[in-house]
Figure 1: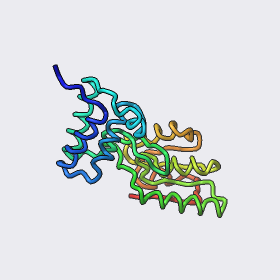
Figure 2 (figure 1 turned 45 degrees about the vertical axis):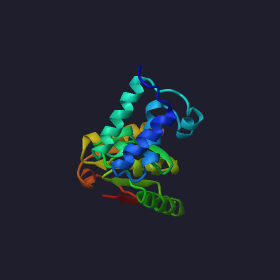
Figure 3 (figure 1 turned 120 degrees about the vertical axis):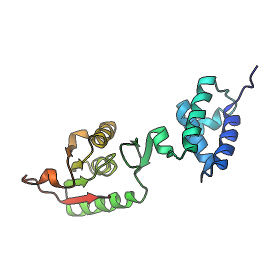
Figure 4 (figure 1 turned 135 degrees about the vertical axis):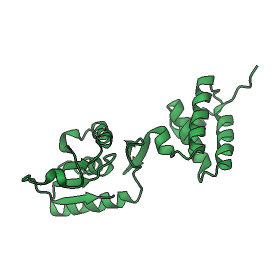
Length: 194
């Protein structure tokens, strides 16, 4: 008969494994993985510390840890990255939004509010983190999001729908500002974080 492993046991084992793999924040990552696969919050892990895991959950956790040990980013494994206090879907089709990019969005929001700007363009939108955040936090904004990759645009559209701003975003496929060449469209602010 196999040993019954609880949330507490798995967190301890996973943390130890991630330490051996050289992960910078092993306990945090173990918590994120386990919370994701159980569909609960990280706090929920501690409320349910003695809950046993079934074999399917253990297999999923082993898969997460195996992928992470091979260098796959946590965000791609769980499929989400928080940006501007909003969850954004991510996968290998897009770069993971970086925390310092939040400064760009915060500054853009200040400039737009101060100058009553409404029209923005996000060049190389990727996951749509910049474009969606602008539309979410500035409800009068209309944002054009451009990316050369159709898979990235699909992720950006999914994020726009998830945050209820898709009606104020236009998605264009193309390189840099080329999709706008020859149009009459003008913008108050152009953003890019390549």
